[in-house]
Amino acid sequence: MAGYLFAVGIFLSGIFIRIIDLDLRSLWRDEAWVAILASSDSLSTAFFTQWPVPPLFVSSLYLSVHLFKNNEFYLRIIPALFGIGGMALIYYFCLKNLGKAEAIGALLLSSFLPVLVAYSMELKQYTGDIFFTMLLLIIADHLLQHKLRSLMWWGILAVSGAIGLWFSYPLIFVVLTTGLVSLICIYRNGPAGERRRLLFCWLAVYSVHIASFLLLYFTVINNQLADANLESFWRSTFPDADGIIPYMKWAVLSIWGFFEYFWNKYTLVVLPISLFGIIELIKSNRPRIIHYWGMIFLFLLISSSLHLYPFGGNRANLFTAPFFIIIYIAGMKSIWRLFRTTTIRRMAASLCVIILAVQMADAAIYYKNNKGYLWYTQYPLMQDMRTAISVMEQYRKDGEAVYVYYGGDLAFEYYSRYYYKKPVSPLIVGKNHRDNPERYADDLVTLIENRKPFWLLATHIDPGEIIYIDSFLSQKAGYMGRPFFGKNGALLVYYK
Image (cartoon, rainbow, N blue to C red; front, side):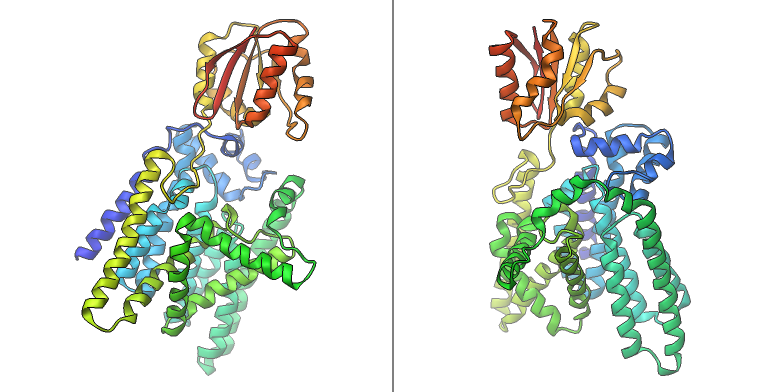
């Protein structure tokens, strides 16, 4: 009973830190374009988006902001709910497959791991990837272990996979994995007299999955892939095909990247423990956990080799986080089991608890200061366009021009609808000249040729570019800038 109460306390704490600050931060650039989609006038516009966002995910955002209120809380509550659901599913999976103590350890990590908390508080789809990955694995595992003859459970697997694909693109790797594992299970464990019926069930389920994915691909994904920026953004994660040695080097560095992404500088401690965990799972009566995740990583590796999907530590692979949590916790159990005497076992268990306690304490520091001692990736991003626009509304006079630095274009588009009551005219939205900052002068020509005062509004800032723009205006155009707001990743300057 005490163990379950402890688990409930962890779970409630995980929920608390995910929802307490949902509306305190402005949407940053990547979040803003998702918010703009969710704020579309029609559901079909949001559903058939050209942006690389799963259609049912953005549709759930659309319903949230149109049924309730269009603000940061009701936009971010959907990723937060997926994050909370992911915590529960990771706990349940470990409880059924590892044990009560391991499940509590996994719940502790999934509740407070900084990167998982961060994406539960961001307007992104990646917590949904974790949720549907674990949901499909749990359903498939339960079906194969206990309900192989149940038509109802085959139907549940069919529906969950077919719908989940429209919420989560990387779920295709899980669908392929469960398909292969279930086929092997039918041939190895299925009753000989019912094998034909089970094969028919398998064929029906995965026909539904394939049909769902093909429909998704040709109606939505194919249009989203037309964005050339998408492939170029992930190009650096794809392998070097010049030879086996460069390829192996890339693979090793990519696997290291997974650990570093999830564990930051704790990787040096977590990696050897995780290797013990993999050995523990293979030697135990639960090798299917390694079978599931081994196939998922194999499909990921193949897709990256074909330049179709990134492989390595990044947000696109956040759905693999449960695996790294599971092998880490299993590794701690393995180390504890190495020792035979009760005293040394207690010392080993205490050491494992201390390691987890240090990581959680550092996570608490991280949440307070946006940076811990060994958790060093800074999430979530602060780009306070909302406050900058509110300040500008107080001081801007009618007719004064506004120049929006290109990094703040999408956030300005969203917040100007709800936080700025006056029409913004004239308005100039800058272009991206990151490779040639001198071109920013071209954006400013129409503002400075009339020698009239104007406002510069910027978020998602490259400091060097802002310095160039300010020096150009002051030294070559004779303008003097007066900052009105300049913190939390946003800048508002009045030039005259």
